[in-house]
Length: 112
Image (cartoon, rainbow, N blue to C red):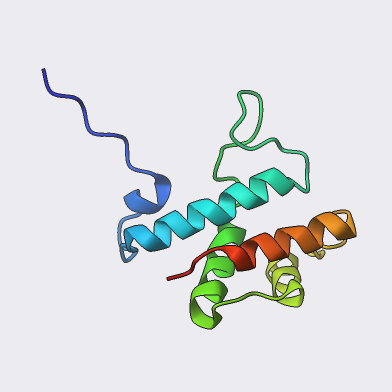
């Protein structure tokens, strides 16, 4: 008996959207993991009673774009992306030390 293929992840299933490389999707997943750990709104993404695991994907994708384009992302760039979606900065939603550590972890990711 053959195994059924895994259900496509949302970003794999969007018709008309160019497919991204595995490396791109992996980097988005890494940024999502960092955002989920930070969880500035207490949504508990990926938990049984929480939001979907990819709850912060709309914010993760432009962060990944910046990382790939420039090789790094600044705190101001993270805040600008967050403000676009939420009307407030991410740094204002988190403890300053946690925010700085989050940005540092993003910059430790390998965008190649």
